[in-house]
Amino acid sequence: MELDPLILSRIQFAFVVSFHAIFPVFTIGLASYIAVLEGLSYKTKNPVWMKLSSFWTTVFAVVFGMGVVSGIVMSFQFGTNWSNFSQASANFLGPMLSYEVITAFFLEAAFLGVLLFGRDRVPPGAHLFAAIMVATGTFLSAFWILSANSWMQTPSGAELRDGVFHVTSWSEAIFNPSFQLRFFHKVTASFLTGGFVVAGVSAWYLLKGREVEANRKALSMCLWLLLIIAPAQLVIGDFHGLNTLEHQPTKVAAMEGNWETSRNVPLLLFAIPDQENQTNHFEIGVPGLASLILTHEWDGELPGLKEVAIEEQPPVAIVFWSFRIMVGLGLLMILFAITGLVLRSGDRYWRSGWFLQGMRFMSVTPFIAVLTGWFVTEFGRAPWLVYGMMTQAESVTPSLTGGMALFTLIGYIVVYSLVFSAGVYYLMRVLYEGMERADKEPDTQSERPKRPMSAAHTSFELHDSNEQPTKQGGH
Image (cartoon, rainbow, N blue to C red):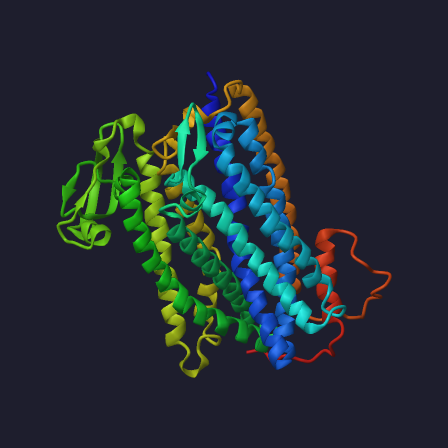
């Protein structure tokens, strides 16, 4: 069987990006949460806030390290697998990726050291400033990366001459038509991810009766956040859908499984898209609802997939079902956020075992929603790499063979599996230990951190060992 280097390169990049994406989407939200905890600790001097901040900073350091390791190789793939694209887009993507490293990664790395090791070595205000700078760095990173990706989705401010993109307007290229909505959509998803993970971990501790006061406060904070953010994401998603309909109509047609351009299009709750025969099987839908959602009119016209040749259509089944999983999980998040509000009466939100168990399992759903949303975005763009201007087939490295692509793909899978296993193992150790205090105070001079992950862990222990142990009541 002949190995197709284009297909294998797409699989390889999809694997690496999907693996990497789950880490930044968590750290962006978690960094802001840590900055809020540091602010509360600075203002109130309540040790509970400091304890929560120390614990979640430890988690942040582990996840940040895994994100760096998994993401650093992505830029190399542009040269190894997509050299034609790299050469064509270098005038724009080269500076964008450089700005991300200079303004975001350096900021995060420098102030993360202060955040980890500086609690007892710098003034409290400086430690709070470090937390804010780390959070700012995560936003800057998202800004540049999403601007670059959005430009590939809705290219503007550049023209293609002799196979090379030349920037004609930096402001139009950076703030391209889909960037603002895509940025807010991603940041809101990050807050949802951070909120549900913190809430889920806090619920697990409450079920075990561990550090009840601290975890009750953490759960309460997250439920208020989710009550605002979850519905807001639905609204942002609606505007994003309108934007996509305007600039990428074929992607919307794939999302809705709509083959013929028509009005009063039903919202399909279930269908089996048959791309070969350009139809759906076993449709179950709500009449007119797709037109209402996407055009805000019952008889609004939606484009059909048949408007373009079959070779220019994205893989419909993947886009169709990924979109429904993402939306379904989003609605489930809203339901849990509203349930948390209802259960605030009588403090049932942290006393109801069934709700705490539900929050535990909900901590996984944002990651699934982010990945399926990413699939909609990227698969829905196919076969274009730069939408409407440069295809994936035109972008792949000419000298790349199927054997070479398969070899590196297997290598990435093996290495990433080892990295993920090691990272999850260490993260589980941190979570199982929780906020409980060390039995004895370590020697801060002789036990200096020697590895990045042990640095995070030791920083947490140094703070926690300075407090006197108190008993926490169970329930």
